[in-house]
Image (cartoon, rainbow, N blue to C red; front, side, top):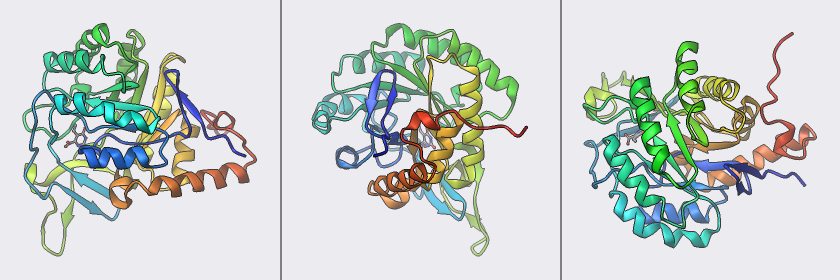
Length: 311
Ligand code: ERO
């Protein structure tokens, strides 16, 4: 028997898979389906103080290398989730809430309220939404990020994580890691979608989504190398007590395995979940188990963070 269980911030998961926030996790029905799926944990859509319709449709499209989205943070508002989360406790697996308030004050108010919701295991503060017109990503502004992290960690009574945008420069990894190492953040999730990509339909000679002139966050298999570098670099730079959730480019059990090698404790699935639905966790787990068996590994500890360098 292969033990796929893992632990994040002291919370035990029977396997390392969960959905990425935003993927099929906004409505009651979607969250019930995720609760009933074989994922080890689940997380809700990033929420704001007030309900939002989001950007005009079409706002999500698949392409050969992945997906593009400019959803614009549609969600029913945090109060909807505050009263609904207790219904999800029956699934007896960890439930995370994603929070993406439009200001620091909004985040503080939402997180204060969520701190009192018993059904919630942890909170992921999203510092990296690329799609709200007029709202730059907090995660690319280090001073602003430090201010958010400091204020929110003071009032959060649950294990708190931050969802980060992809970084591409070692100096940026170091700056963000230094901020997080000084805080009581329990985990980081790397990465959110690659902001403001552009997908073109050459036959129609036009963009494929309507908002923002066709620009949107890129996810799916084409982002995997960037996701892996971010997981690996943060694992290297963060204090050992701060855990890493990998997110980006997971389409197979091999992709999950690579995230684990890079140092992820938990692995989120976004585009592939949107494309195949919650049943996809069954396939990913089966494929991961086959790889582990072939390598004669009996638990995730045998491979987690064990990426080798060329000598
Ligand atoms: O547009 C969105 O709602 C959205 N899309 C993403 O790819 N990442 C997000 O973090 C996000 C909103 C919070």
